[in-house]
Length: 102
Image (cartoon, rainbow, N blue to C red; front, top):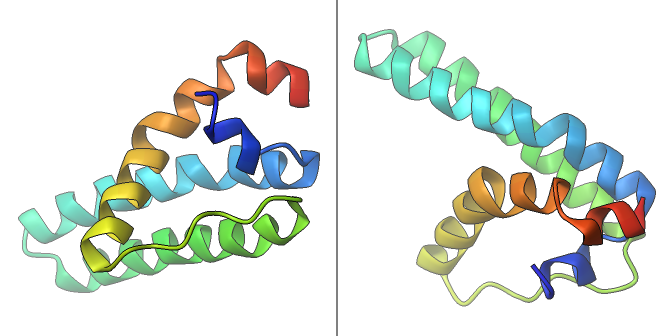
């Protein structure tokens, strides 16, 4: 967690992430469920919701003093994105580092 907190210190960014990470996770899960059941319009709408949540997070990172490291390509983008949304940020919320930035 030590390097993750470098990019998530600003309270406005933290609040945005607290609101949008669950939306991103839920949107992705609902999208997969919809597509699995052949509901392609629903899957598209859930995907759009997840991307809107991601866009809000990206916009809120401008309040951080440290910029997020550049992506090394599409595979790195998707790996980091899903790892951070599903695992790193939820774990960060329960860490002492998060509480110190709050």
